[in-house]
Image (cartoon, rainbow, N blue to C red; front, side, top):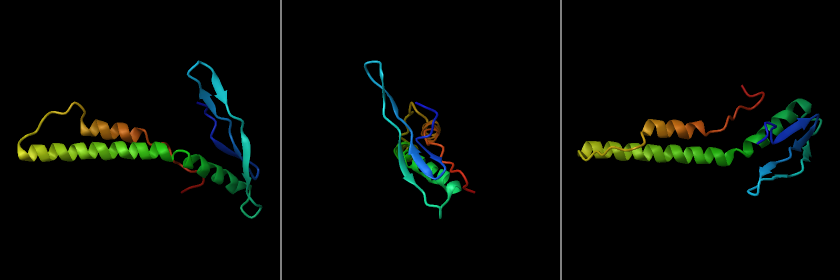
Length: 117
């Protein structure tokens, strides 16, 4: 995976970066990059990078959903553990709720947006 962002701005043009995909056969497939859109003079060059950042964040939605689903699962497990403890039928789990939540939260992508306060 490239360190290059998926979308970038050059002046008022927003570009999609090429995507490098590792193939099972051992090669790499590379899609071509292309211009996506051009912001108007009214928006300006300074905000074009913000538009590119927002497009990048849009591609991270699936990773965020997966991380939130993992957090939800860990919290359900914690509630089941608490209910079992209160009922006196507590059993030991192999994965602690705290470590499951920490692992889920670590999968949330960095969603800092340039220029945001």
